[in-house]
Image (cartoon, rainbow, N blue to C red; front, side, top):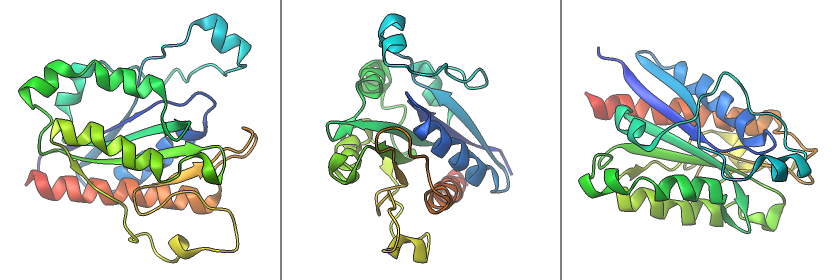
Length: 203
């Protein structure tokens, strides 16, 4: 069976989305004949601004992606932090550079899921996902929602849990909170779930 390529394309300023992305990669790579690769969208903030924001260094093992490289993948998972209820500007800027691919509809028909991080409950756990779908729709990509496929954790009420039927999510709070075991389980499942669907569609 030919290899199914999943690109996990994300932006992470303080590492919360990166942590989710790595778990999603683990989930996707648990599926036979799937190769999941991590990619970062280019940073748009100047280094001096990042320094003032106390942003950590980006990982050396995750390369930046250029728009044309998206065409190589069979399916995607896009991850981003929320800014005022929508995806971070860095991700929007990246999608804005894909006009040539959009014009030729080279991504049309390819499946894609989304995941995210917000600060608090009102920070856009669902709105961030809903508004991100517009990017996929204009490219003709097929949005793959998580639904309630990840089991009982979706109904957890005793602990704070990010995510929704739209995809896996986490809360960063003031930045000190890290993704919980339950949120990471959901991320792993999403990676596996989208990879399985992508592999079926490639046949």
